[in-house]
Image (cartoon, rainbow over all chains, first blue to last red; front, side, top):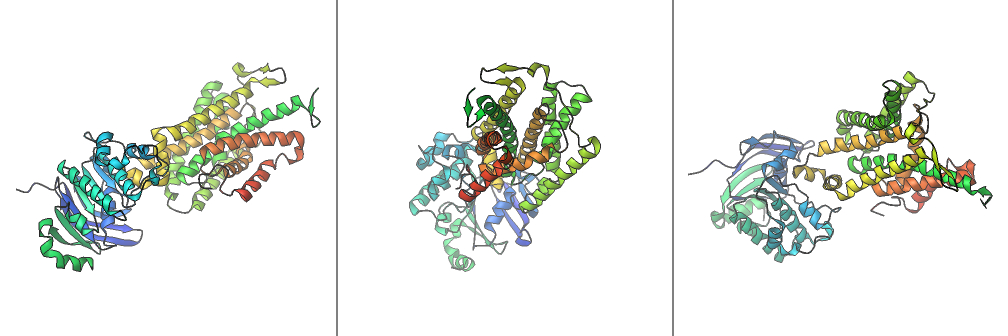
Length: 235
Length: 295
């Protein structure tokens, strides 16, 4: 018995200035699922996330989340629905230290993690409170970017390439943390190029190409569809 | 009588006091300019006009409505700040995405229009504004006479400047502001209403200019040209301190006021260019300003 999806994206189009980047994206995410958006560079994965949280100027279509259309509400109200965004560039503020970065996003929903829980999840962050945020290593900045979202009580997380440019050991740790979050019932959209990492967490994969969703592959059918997938990704 | 290089100490101290007073006004104005530049990326040429409006608001409230000094000192900045909010909402916010030059031209135009309008209505002559009875007189410090109102101006503007600096460097709201200068899109994605924050920032800084204008009314006469005569020096202060450096703007403003005062004592002919000589030197040696974070 399939319940109604938590997020239902229909015909999402988006523009950066004059260039039309998304040409009608359709996908949905159910509560508690981890769904990936995979595809080549420039396929529109990041833009899809950015459209959901409203940092893209011009958008069309519908993104229904808990009954509200994200395209129709003011950008600053999206986070208040419990949607947390971890950007590709991580977005750690250089003018704030680690603790200030961690405490930065306001908590909009009850049920956010306490600082100790976040430190338990990402031990690397512990004892670094007064270090300037951007002095952390890339992997630690990624942990901080995820950690600060967990404080806010967000239960729907948009994660943009958390493994990009990060040492394999740290990727393992981030993967372990994400699996814990999944067990806790968080819903996650993961944009990822690292297929092995994606397969270790995700329930389903959406393949994007040239601003459209061209395929959907359940995680347990990934191996059987490897040829198809490699063709999409051009490996 | 003791002299220093042929200048009596009392005269020297008197000029130093004048320099500190001027520096206090430079501080209130350059602080706002630096914040507006840092947070909104706007070079606010209308700042002097808002200072002038603060003076006129105080004068009008007194002469037309008969309000007392303390009420006008509260009301004038609020009125000027409200006008600033309107200007930001109607015009400035449309220009954030384009080159600095557009907002510079817009605010320059606003300054010219406001000054012209007030000159048309009130004439170019200065309007006197009496010192409030509670702040008349002065204290004899032994080595010099300190008029009460002047002491109050220095204390009030320092207090306001330090409070503003603390609010930006030490509070959560200040952290939002600082972060929004780095990455406004992300701050918004965390659920913070960035456009509203920018409007309030502009209104607050312009309100500071209005406060300075109201504070200046009893010292200098209120006239339509009072803003344009001070704004150029204030821009020099911001350039010397480092665009966007808030603490730097305050320190530089006071220091330059004093330097100006000293020049007036020892070589009066150079007093009006002293600030610009310092600016040239700073630009030559440290182009990004004395207090800028990136050197």
